[in-house]
Image: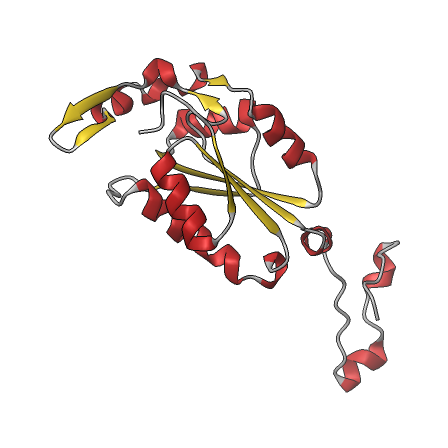
Length: 192
């Protein structure tokens, strides 16, 4: 027997005889119905991929090579509402509107109030959000792999096609190799 359409509130009331003999009627929620249709999962990095935060980004060179200047980034975190949108944002919007696509943002950012305001008011909320907790110093690739791992064990996503959009080639390779998914490299000045 397939899902039952809910036409009115009375339909959801359990008949008295069902209560006596222990049957329960489970009507799927709209979210459950939507999740059953998922055939694609789109995973987006934020900075340098769909969001241009280059006005508050710079790199420094250390013994281990070039990397993001985290002190400068943190000093300018309050400027998140001045971030812009990059061309891939159009695809992100299409994926958000597609009932068959589950959208995930996986960013190495620590999300603060201005960042969430930008997501809420400008970018648009994904179905799921992976970000760094304050004080977390694990690598970005480990953060993203750990955050995404559960999706590869859920029945809802077992037949879905996954695609990962990332501007850091090291993160892209690590995530795609770990989960055997398709990756799309987005060249950017922020991929450190």
